[in-house]
Image (cartoon, rainbow, N blue to C red; front, side, top):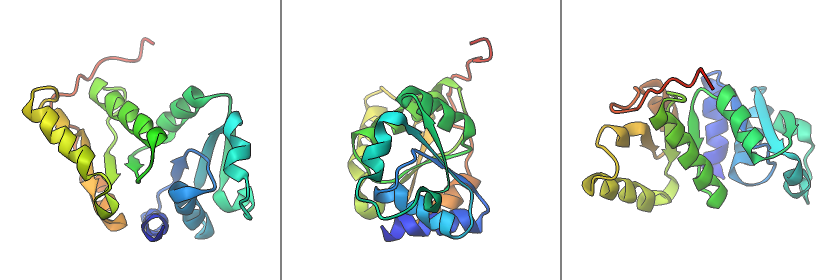
Length: 180
């Protein structure tokens, strides 16, 4: 939680906005609350079905978490988040975090976006995933150039450094998605 709150402060210090899944609990809720409390711009995008779950037992008002847009489903959520974001940061999480992380990595590889993707590896949480990426490169499933789509930060401050120094990975497909 301390690192999540620090990330909100780093976003504020850099005058960056937060677009996130709209929850009020957990690590992303802490980032959103931290940034909103500092006067930063926060936009939560949440599927209608998750609203009650994300607000259950939370003694905060939605205003403490910034602007909220309620959408029909998870696909609409991810599409809107993808259009509004200039970078993506994954904090420790579960299945949903992994699903969203790998979709955004795939979008980068396909050329749908060329934004930085940073894994905030708090206390080694993502060591296994980072090891898997190395193994996938060694076994030929991911090219060396494309493996740099994902970068690792170990602190909130390092997230900002990784975003600022980001260069699109070599070997991305750079497909034309304008005709969709």
